[in-house]
Length: 374
Image 1 (tube, rainbow, N blue to C red):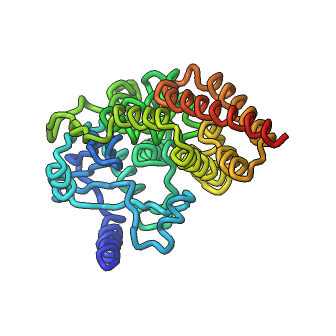
Image 2 (cartoon, rainbow, N blue to C red):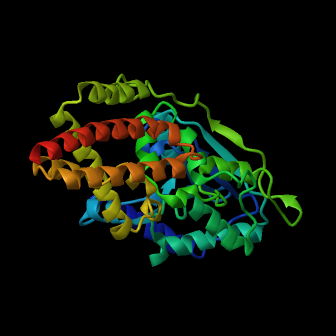
């Protein structure tokens, strides 16, 4: 917390100084695009804004996406979606060496702005930094480091000069899916935790790489807004080592083992896990402010009713058990119809087949149990 307070002290000190500070004719404003990394938080890359002026010696980076781990109730706020992020300001060299340490490429695109436009963006950034506007509620698609950088740039230019120029017919889910290459369980997890919002057409600039590509083609006053991207730091796109367990083979192997063993307790542990995840989806859809989690049709697969199967089986309520299983089959059929054209259909198909198979076994047991009771 002391480091955070010191950061704010420097930030406000610089802002007070910069408020009446004039950039020279030789000043440069550029967009920094940082490549993807292997950690979950770095799988999509990063965007930042650099302002440098050799005449005055300033070389700083405005960085959307900082947050404080010491925030009271951090986990609850993060889960709910009302954790406050803020804009951080750092020396360019400090920013650069962070990516040297992480071995992630960094690209720079200088913006073709007039001196007055540069000054306006510089002033707007400093106004944000020294006001309550420096805080914002993070949204995965609508309000991240890329969105915020695009918004402040467009606001300073007085027009929507920057927009997505790439393919807008793909869904957000389809755009995100390849970023999880060699990160299987992260790919599976995001596939099932995201709801209908990520199935909308990806019309917003929300990924750093898309922002960089769009800057190469957008114009302002008939001139290219940005110069061609220069590589400040070059590494090969990092490849995960593909740990022995984080791959599709352990996933398929585990599901196959559950299907072959078909022990009641093993199956119920599996059903309980899926049912509890389904309960989380139901609660998150109502409680969380993360719009990406709302209206999650994957609850038809990770279904809370699977918990009812366990309860009814042990309670020997066989007629109700058969009805519940029949309802679950119908829900699985609806899920297949909904999923058939989704990019993550194949990744959940083994679970669909296993659930249907295991439920069939319990349906037969329920019929025999009901017969004995008669």
